[in-house]
Amino acid sequence: MKNKYLPIESTGLRLFIATDKEQIIEGQKLRYEVFYKEMGAEPSPQMKKEERDFDRFDDHCEHLLVQDVNTKKIVGTYRMLRREHAASAGSFYSESEYNIDRLKEYDGEILELGRSCVHKDYRSKLVLQLLWSGIIAYVLDNDVKVLFGCASFHGAGIELHKESLSYLYHYHLAPENLRVRTQERYYNDMNIIAKEDLPSPKKIITNLPPLVKGYLGVGAYIADGSFVDVPFNSTDVGIIVETKNIPQKLFEKLYKLTGKK
Image 1 (cartoon, rainbow, N blue to C red):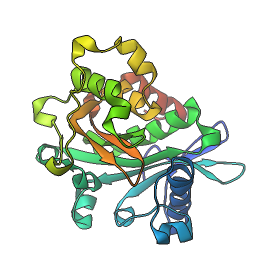
Image 2 (image 1 turned 135 degrees about the vertical axis):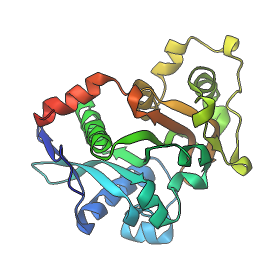
Image 3 (image 1 turned 180 degrees about the vertical axis):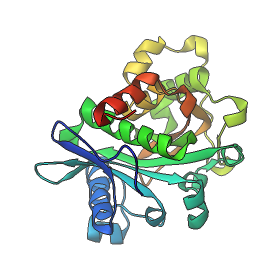
């Protein structure tokens, strides 16, 4: 899909939306390297054979990619699924973990974000800024009102992350009209530690995964309930962002990178 603001090149990196199957496959290979080889997720036999992460949603998503201009290697990715493409897929990916009926009833375009990862040698602020510039470019081009998806803590089990989960519940729980909830059969209450018994928020925020911190930095709300994903060796939290809450400085960063307004 043509986008007014993309592609973008900055400091030896190129950000763009995949336009062919081979580019998508390169993104899937990066996902495999990060999720399975590095983070310890359990691949299916076919994934292990092909050394790429894939599912039935990939053919319906648009894939945001960051490429090293010199090596041509894909070093960062996000995949994006909006309402009309979810309809063709039969659902949003998140619906396997969360009840998102309130979002589906929202008056305006909604966009699911997922499968975010960056190669271990490129985990710099620049790559994350580029990926967010791409998301904001897509938001502007498609008049997206709400972003949503999941962010993960490494390690499957709520006890491993009880302080962080409790902090997110007490300080960032989504308002009622946007309050996505973990499917009942998977629901884990995040109100594990009372607010008054938590360490200082500053201490907890410091130890949050970068993706979770990044979402909070753009005004994210957190869904009700966590999801323990054993095959992915992670504990997931649902993320909801009203795009009107995204800081103006991120839009300005996009305009500066593209020279457009």
